[in-house]
Length: 221
Image (cartoon, rainbow, N blue to C red; front, side):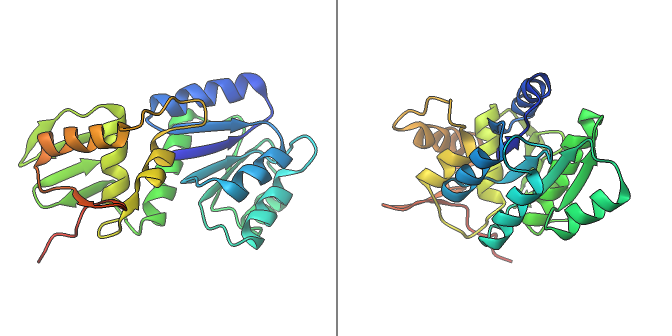
């Protein structure tokens, strides 16, 4: 899943970028509000972690502009502003969650997983598809009760497709989900990961829609 991190504190931004990447997220880090506005206008993200006190343009303005533009991605405000009035204002402006600095990293990661669950219409960390079960919190996969080892990006691709059953996802959208701006993306990278997932989880799991992208069809009941 791709995260836009907007944070002007360099040590914190570096630490969060590393921690989120370790947790399997593709992270793009920006340090001012105007750059965040521009990125949200032209790129697709699954989540946004947004500081409020930013150079040039306040995070509340960034949030308000995004919501006026019709963007529905989950936004978690991460800020030192700890007054009740600030929390109420942030949530009323369109934030989906509000976390005050200093914070615990495990709590931040849990809140991000919760936001992703809600945006996908799920109430559980586990995603089930036939005999395949994915636990997003522990980042584990089983098939028929047997553990299946996936790489970070194989897991991210599987998660993205299972979160949108029946929806064809283009190669470009999948690349945006798996990679940040600074990552090197090969011309057939997505195809390689799809091949690996089919080999590990079943040849019929992922269907190719020629000229469009890939889809995991819902399980027939």
